[in-house]
Length: 619
Ligand SMILES: *[C@@H]1O[C@H](CO)[C@@H](O)[C@H](O)[C@H]1NC(C)=O
Ligand SMILES: *[C@@H]1O[C@H](CO)[C@@H](O)[C@H](O)[C@H]1NC(C)=O
Ligand SMILES: *[C@@H]1O[C@H](CO)[C@@H](O)[C@H](O)[C@H]1NC(C)=O
Ligand SMILES: *[C@@H]1O[C@H](CO)[C@@H](O)[C@H](O)[C@H]1NC(C)=O
Ligand SMILES: *[C@@H]1O[C@H](CO)[C@@H](O)[C@H](O)[C@H]1NC(C)=O
Ligand SMILES: *[C@@H]1O[C@H](CO)[C@@H](O)[C@H](O)[C@H]1NC(C)=O
Ligand SMILES: *[C@@H]1O[C@H](CO)[C@@H](O)[C@H](O)[C@H]1NC(C)=O
Ligand SMILES: *[C@@H]1O[C@H](CO)[C@@H](O)[C@H](O)[C@H]1NC(C)=O
Ligand SMILES: *[C@@H]1O[C@H](CO)[C@@H](O)[C@H](O)[C@H]1NC(C)=O
Ligand SMILES: [Cu+2]
Image 1: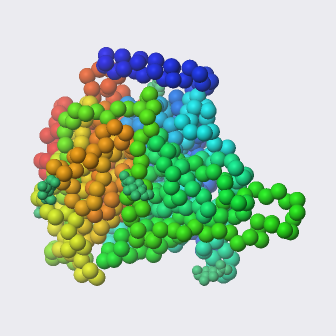
Image 2 (image 1 turned 180 degrees about the vertical axis):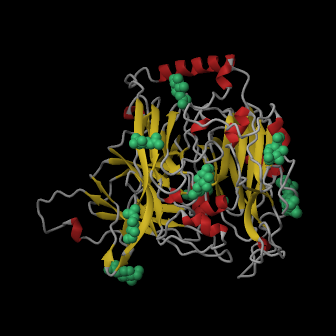
Image 3 (image 1 turned 90 degrees about the horizontal axis):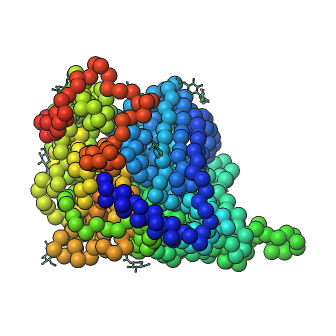
């Protein structure tokens, strides 16, 4: 596209001008990794557990690149599970083939098979992460994905830190996590983690037979500044992170720079990342670093709270030995928010604004399409059962977007992206009735979405309405500017929902409590410096308004990053059509991508469109 080229040239000139005083860029290079996925036994809390890991590491290896680099990752699957790896937050411009979502962008990598991902890292800096896009297994198959500025650390829009440290909040399960989805489908819904972790370490709040667990220790030098690259990799909960006696300056979120925001508590939901500077400016000693999850208060169902802690330890000049030896000090403990405090998270997210930089993307003012999406629960009657109306009768719970619960057909013959690209039929012969269905732009019926009466007290299950179960898709013409309001509902529970869009960043224009009301709330939109995120936390009993430009052709997953919500169907697929020019058309798949098999019917162009809304599995 002409305008795009011109714009790019202008941007480059601006960047060149901006950086004329900074060192020359380092030459782009190819960063190559081999990820061997295998199972290993790990003993924690006196119990041996079988975990699936990359290269025997927990968390997995760090991918550390410079903006402009290419990344090649050879995945060797020596585990008994089907695996894909998703590069969470990497924009994958014209590269949807490498997005790593099973049966959406690729066939899963089967046991004893290999697959190579190739990605170009352009126009992004900061902290992202990678994880398996397999239910449950991402709890142990994940790692940091760090993108450094092309012009070196001196071009950070903040003082150059002394050290940069990934802080991954995770959870520890004493079960083979490949079973999580199997249990879930069999309606065994009481699987829970047993502990939380910081950088894989459980910490000293946990012990068995008196032996305290190891915790993560960050050694600091007095007066130095540390850049913490914080990632929430747990399966369900948003976490608060604090370090006793220290403050943070938040400088980026989801690999987008933000205006420096000083706080003593970080709020980070699954899928989100936060980059924060911490100055070691406290008296020398030891300070606990604590991560605590939050959850909705009663009458919401409560789960055990797994707190974890590590430590910030000042480097101590051991001249005098006995006196003042910090190992004899009692480490300072931070005062944490209450586990039911979700206001602190609301404020944390509300305080993020994007940093003004020449290369920052401007918010488009002309909106082409508007959608209002409710996030809620419903029920469905599994095939072959007769159901009463109630969930926990014979019917099962489902999570929905506008009353559609996302489900792929169990007999898909080709991934959706291939079906879209080659215009072939993605489902094969037998069929379980699950077909493509257009995600509606609005809920079927408006109701008082956040009415407390929707969350019943005690064990009495709500009369959850039937939902549509289908492969929810929404098509966008190339370049469409989309406004989308996500509305959390109070149906049965009042969770927040971290919504993650693949292949794009979203401008977060506003958030609010209660029901969204356009005639009141549009006035609160920040069109000047809204933060850009790949994962937006839709507050409990509240809403978020986002805007994004559908300018990356492909088939992109959009879903809640709480694992149970995702398994229950809080997801949809956005199909973004090719643009008018060569550089806005999705290239053919890499050679390692199996093509539509000959056993699959080939369709005439546009027939995939005809499948939309044709067949819906009977509820
Ligand atoms: C894990 O331990 C179990 C029993 O202790 C053993 O049977 C199994 O082979 C081990 N698996 C691995 C991958 O080491
Ligand atoms: C792995 O994927 C293949 C092909 O998609 C499928 O036939 C097989 O059932 C899957 N295996 C597991 C354990 O899910
Ligand atoms: C997968 O990669 C490993 C290590 O590079 C190699 O030894 C093996 O032959 C490959 N397997 C397949 C099926 O390509
Ligand atoms: C990465 O960039 C190079 C150079 O522009 C291009 O040739 C290659 O096709 C790109 N690869 C991917 C996977 O986008
Ligand atoms: C071990 O854990 C229990 C229960 O959490 C706690 O009461 C006890 O103090 C712990 N013991 C040690 C040595 O930390
Ligand atoms: C920013 O945080 C403070 C508390 O730390 C809060 O009072 C304020 O409302 C927040 N601002 C926004 C826009 O959320
Ligand atoms: C796709 O395949 C299914 C199952 O074989 C069949 O029912 C459907 O008609 C096919 N769709 C098209 C458009 O050919
Ligand atoms: C959701 O869809 C189902 C199936 O079409 C329908 O029965 C139900 O009434 C819908 N729910 C709402 C809230 O409109
Ligand atoms: C929406 O906001 C407008 C303007 O503030 C107000 O007049 C109206 O009553 C509100 N609607 C609802 C349903 O609260
Ligand atoms: Cu959710």
